[in-house]
Amino acid sequence: MSNLELCITYQNKFTKLQKISFLLNTAIKGVIKAEFELNELVVTVELNELLNLLTFLKLNPQCQFEQLMDVCGVDYPEREFRFNVVYNLLSVSLNQRIRVITQTDENRAICSVRSLWKNADWWERECYDMFGILFSGQPDLRRILTDYGFNGHPLRKDFPLTGYVEARYDADQHRVVYEPVSLTQDMRDFDFDSPWEGIITLPGDEKIHDKR
Image 1 (cartoon, rainbow, N blue to C red):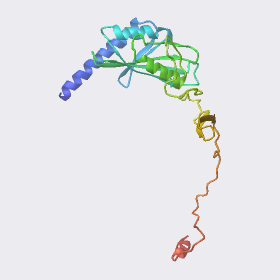
Image 2: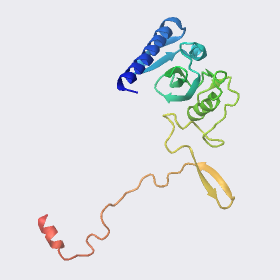
Image 3: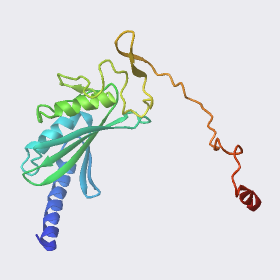
Image 4: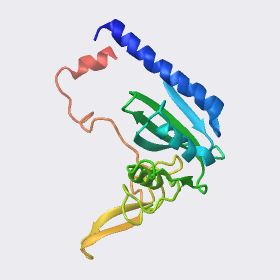
């Protein structure tokens, strides 16, 4: 494919997304904004209208976003609704992508989209595990990456870097045990001088001291 053909293909794809952007901004309820960021169409939608929007994007002939590529979270702890939940969609039929963003907090559940895309099960469980984001209508909302009985959600920005517990093998109990984190080397003074300095004098050392 020549450079001219590539430019025409890109322009056609960009034009199609512009039409979708105009449609979402003018005709779809709950859309806060639909605009381009770094040549990608990003749609921000109210939490209560998320499922309706995603259903439209999957079934509408102009959209046909039949694949859910991933669902991820972003934490802004200083905000009232601290979490952005991001849905990345792909249309194989029309060769186009879109990103959908909504906001929530620790208590407001997001409607599960597993009825639209079966693979949402795994992504929603990961968001719950890493951020503590709740999904209503999700029948298997268990942790998926952390261990059984894990305390907290590791990708929250207020989660301590050391975690809350540490694991070790107990030789007496013949099993792995979990204990509160103990930073035994929290504060240490390091002496970076050579241990041999001042002990042995080698031929030529006097020249170095003379230059100083």
